[in-house]
Length: 177
Image 1 (tube, rainbow, N blue to C red):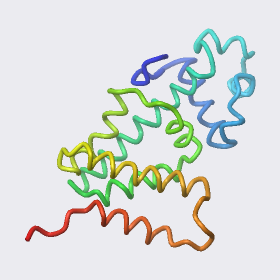
Image 2 (image 1 turned 90 degrees about the vertical axis):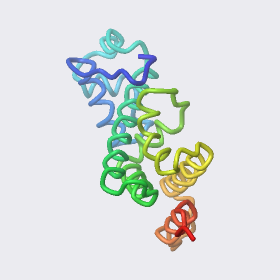
Image 3 (image 1 turned 135 degrees about the horizontal axis):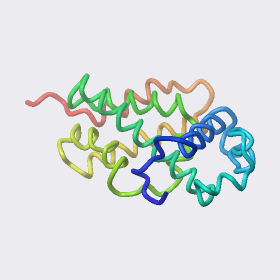
Image 4 (image 1 turned 180 degrees about the vertical axis):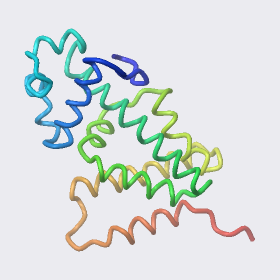
């Protein structure tokens, strides 16, 4: 499963990925072992290797799932508010906060070029008017804020909503004049 754009869609591989996700989301990345995954699926650990050569291929399938879902969430936000960085940032944050372990697991690894990663980036690229540098900077803001928030790196009582609004405002073009 080296191509993250390909995901198991049926049968045992899909069941394994669904079980891996449930385990990850419920207990965090340290719980995601092949033995725990086999127990959850109801097979012996060696049986998993018939479908996935190693744990990293299961993680790759989870990452592909997260990227496809993110692409869907951002495409829906773009459709609801075309060109709105605010809508995209809000949707991105909401998705990440709803799936913290999946988000951190996926974004803590190299992302492949093309496929689901490009689909997830496309709405932001369009909102940035096709400016790659601006789109990268906006993504860095949103990703950095999410990671800091998920890792509890803001001081107690920090107004994260105000910080998000300030960042969003920085990437929102002002009125033409």
